[in-house]
Length: 252
Image 1 (cartoon, helix red, strand yellow):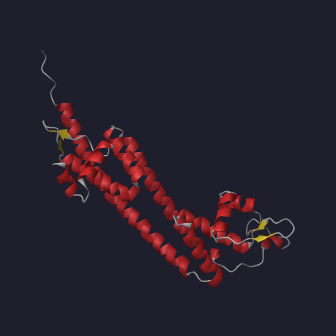
Image 2 (cartoon, one colour; image 1 turned 135 degrees about the vertical axis):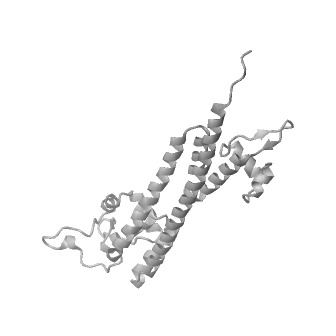
Image 3 (cartoon, helix red, strand yellow; image 1 turned 90 degrees about the vertical axis):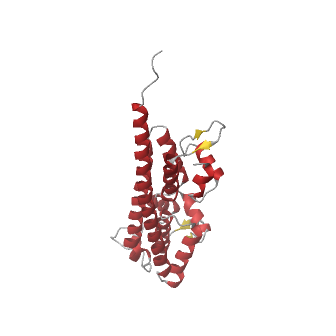
């Protein structure tokens, strides 16, 4: 196949094919005597694998995997794939955590248990440092969330320091979980504002449904990428075995 033939079958340009070869995502092409590239079914399988890896794992991982395969570092490629699956599992667990915490996160704030005699402050910290520690983020992150309208802490009239009450802790926990889900601050702000002002959970439920759809799509893309990658690995193994069996030059 010529570059244009390979490109046409995959909906990309001939220049993209040449670029992929140059960047190590495809194995080197054979050349005719006049210098023209000649691609084979091996290159088509490599291209199918690469194009399937991109929606499943993103460009950086797809690039790493293909370069590792062509360098003979199969385990490095598989490790990168494993990391992607581990990240997807973590995101699924995060979504489950949001669902499990929904009642708590959207509950109307009650009296601060920390002020009640004989009870622990189970509604969380009050200072920006304590809240940051609780969530495992930085104080700068909380200030950024405040600037985006996600948090609206009061100020201590004597010191001017931020004071985070029960509703602020709830909103911060929700923001933290949704950020783990990949949502941008503007979207999280809209969700929190809906909960804060209307007391409804419709926006949050819609966010979780969309999040679930994206995770399912990513999981399906990973299955497709795994199949394409396995097909390509079989072809690579076959080519290497054939090269090893090929007799060397006759002794002079």
